[in-house]
Image 1: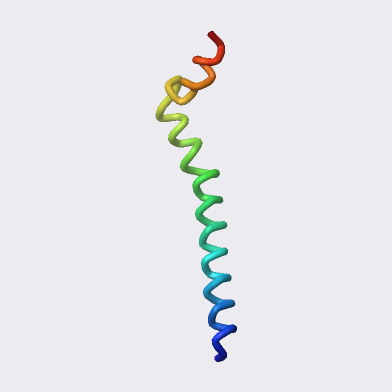
Image 2: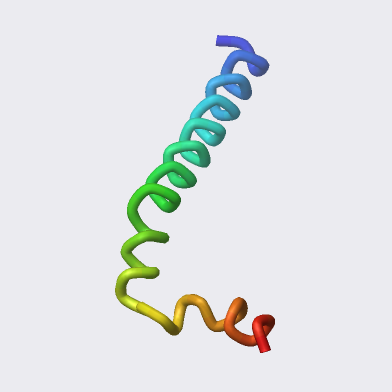
Length: 50
């Protein structure tokens, strides 16, 4: 393999990992944390309403 092919594979693997990580976080982690925090998750909007 040439050096550029190895770099392309590394770049693809990193980009794929970032996409999967963002997908998992937005699909699972954020809703779960929002459910656990309950009303405390919306503290910023409560402060603005005053």
